Image (cartoon, rainbow, N blue to C red):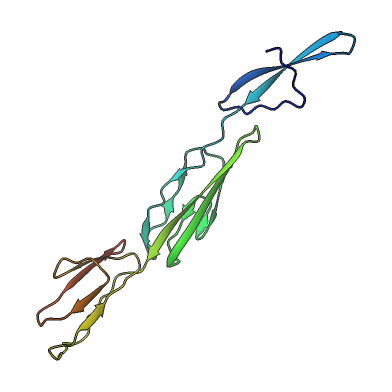
Length: 175
């Protein structure tokens, strides 16, 4: 463009081959030019498939499939590209992939490994008129539906009656 720039820099926003030209001019107006190709390669896609939001503890081992093959999986309960849901709680999986041109990227994802839902509402309970009783059926990764259609893990009883709950997670449903 004819501009004179000391220590120029440029950010490339797309993958392509670009020509960079240096024109040097001496104090005596002598000029020389050199051109070089700059090869800009795209970053590899580090995403992968197969990691569900939840798994049932001791469930089936799953194969993780990367979008860009040739990388390495690491993390909780990982062997090669296999994830085994044996550890209850949050499990983290990382995939790192590097292209031959030196471009490298990674993605970390997590899944929740849950136990089989077990619900114990306890024995029948007698309450005085102004008392209340709270049932708590928290289950890791659980979704809840009580007899009055509320969806919290606990239920506050203030009136006599028959109360029930359905708890569901990746292992199944318990009521």
